[in-house]
Amino acid sequence: MPRVKLWGSLAASIDGQSEVEVRARTLRELLDTLKQEYPALRPQLDRGVSVAIDGVIYNDDWFTPIRDDSEVVLLARLKGG
Image: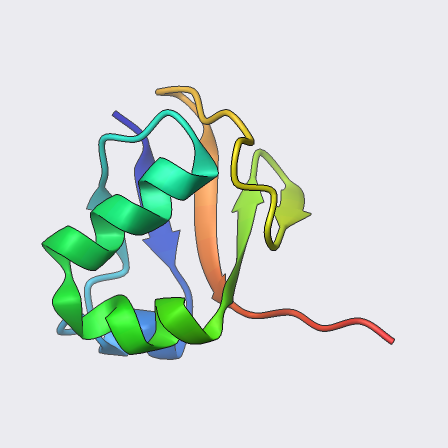
């Protein structure tokens, strides 16, 4: 089961926890599970977040696979320009 590191204000949304375990095989499953298990994250997840999986940042690539040993970091949405 991957461990998800929460960065910045996302950690504050769940009582300051900086890391949680989430059963998910894809980015979409990860976000859906986080919404169910941590409802306080829902508003930020609905606005959009960026997710780094093994050092690569994804925004909306829903079917990106996540392995049990993947390094997963949830960040406020990163916007480029």
